[in-house]
Amino acid sequence: MNKASMVPAVPADLMPELRTDHAGETGAVWIYRGVLAFSRDEALRDFARRHLETEQEHLRLVCELVPLRQRSWLLIPWRIAGFLTGALPALFGPRAVYGTIAAVETFVDRHYEVQIRALDGRPEYAALQDLLRRCQEDECHHRDEASALAGAAVPARPGVLLRAWCAVVGWGSESAVKVARVV
Ligand SMILES: [Fe+2]
Ligand SMILES: [Fe+2]
Image 1 (cartoon, helix red, strand yellow):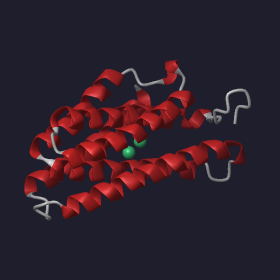
Image 2 (cartoon, rainbow, N blue to C red; image 1 turned 90 degrees about the vertical axis):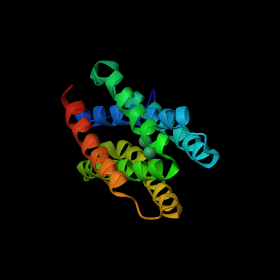
Image 3 (cartoon, rainbow, N blue to C red; image 1 turned 30 degrees about the horizontal axis):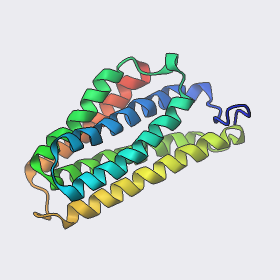
């Protein structure tokens, strides 16, 4: 922890991963903006507003960790991709949005887990590991809440289109991470 600012220290080898977190949390904020732009379902809007608040807090935290010159150059494309990831399923209804969020957060949980494990046995970065763990916990809550709501929605079983869309979202998240690591 840097005493003056209380911002956790980041090891150089993890900075590319933190850059992907910054890109991802930017995308996450815009997913919920996309949902809120198109959905009129009050329960879904409430869900999106609550999640948006958490994602904005995550983005604030990673902004402190990743200096401006280290951030992805593609923040505008990440915002657009995030917005579409929320907006498109919102046009199909709450079931599609909850399924999408569950798919995204399943990916994000694993993404944070790799970084948390990379900090095992490095007590000088315990503050960073702790911060990543707290973000991961929030993402798991998001995933579980979205899965439960998707399961409660009608129809209970996702159709072929939604399953294909969720596969695309998982693949897209993975590809975005690969790109944001380097650009
Ligand atoms: Fe997040
Ligand atoms: Fe999240």
